[in-house]
Length: 280
Image 1 (tube, rainbow, N blue to C red):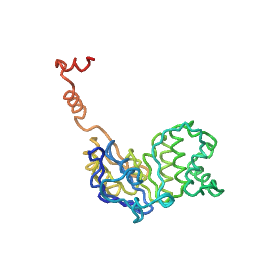
Image 2 (cartoon, rainbow, N blue to C red):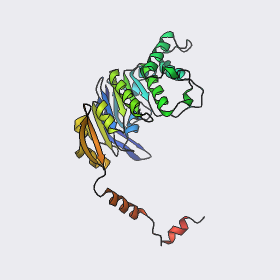
Image 3 (tube, rainbow, N blue to C red):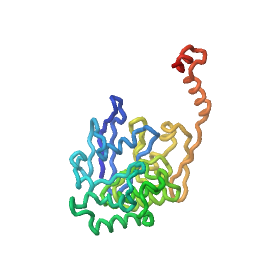
Image 4 (cartoon, one colour):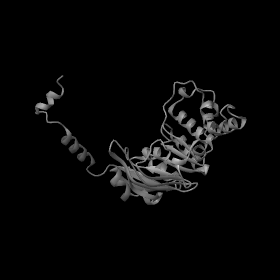
């Protein structure tokens, strides 16, 4: 179980997250959703200790993350973030095997059991045939699947995923999130696609401007009353393939409102400041 209580965080004096609290129950999938800039990825980085909160507490199975070190942290938590391709000529098999690093002896290297775990993880995400390819040569979607395999090879009790479906086509989006659900480990996942969140998450936390706008079961959070003020679109609920699904459209007068904002932000063409701004 992952518990976040009353988290405060900011950059350079500007508050980014305030009063954040959530619980990811054992074996469940908790989705973090919200517009760009709402604080989703920042919250994830606080959970895996890449950032330190200014206030509040974060615990994993009642142990503060600040107290977890080395193998204890690796046994509790695996993380999949957005990574760019490296120029290092590391192969896919070697990249996945890095998930076993916390368990490898300092001078013994990887054991046969480590290699078996890495191979099994590659099979689970369908990349066994890529084992000999260099990681840098892969497409964005292939790299994402490699990172998921590396997390699975780590065999941690909890997984954090930051937009894992980026760069994946529709088939692999569903296959990957379906796999995540089958793992039976406590998962916190950042998702932009609300329909994917509806299908594969047990509970949702909706962030807006660094605060929680709504939290609870999927059906309670994904309503027009909750989503429209946050996303500024029209929302209609439907159902397909046994799951809640959403339809989106522009809000009435959205185009007129956008044009008005542009007019208000445009500089006065007659202003002397206009020409001076482009004068060396």
